[in-house]
Length: 259
Image (cartoon, rainbow, N blue to C red; front, side, top):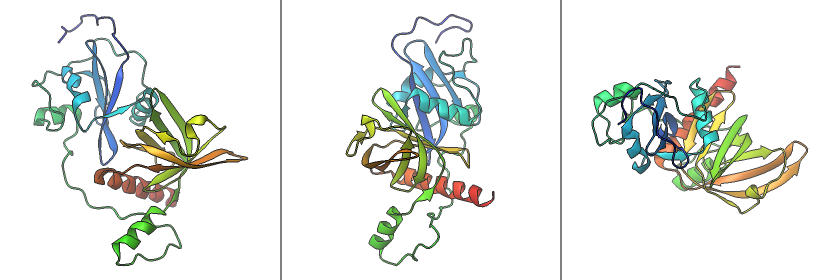
């Protein structure tokens, strides 16, 4: 680890941005570049902190690689503007080595303010649009109907796709996909196109964000007066991500109802 006050060595390659999330809700954002950049912020600690243990984060199965625009959105949600350059002389966290981001020590949890990780939370009921039929006992019928549930929701979706990021407006969101709109058509969202992901969804009404470490596919596209609309179906979501989408929709719907 470099000494406090020492100058950083010249960068080698691009900075990589990574997110850790609980039920798809980001709680830690890191930027890493060997050997000179190893900084992170969290929802509870939005000031950049040097931590050499972050060099291990890209190898953690729970870490999600995000693009710069996606990282900027996460930081903005915590009231932080993401600068292109790392902070010089940021405070350092002296930790045990090697780091294990899947099993943090009490000291590490306190430092990043993430003591909640691993605690059980009450289940959230799926959103049901007005006029939807009552769920029946057959699980297959429940799943089929749930897949069609959509909540109109303003905001944005940022989709990492290789070296590019597709940023579009949100039209509606469901547990299996989203409808988006762009001012004009692009070949990246042609019908049948596969999108690498991850997906970062931000709801305007609730000022909340979720990050889904999953790919997707463009199912349809059509041109309207408001722009180019297209529908994306998600790949298979992990149980925790599905829980996160349900919470995201429930929170946004509740906020909108109280307006």
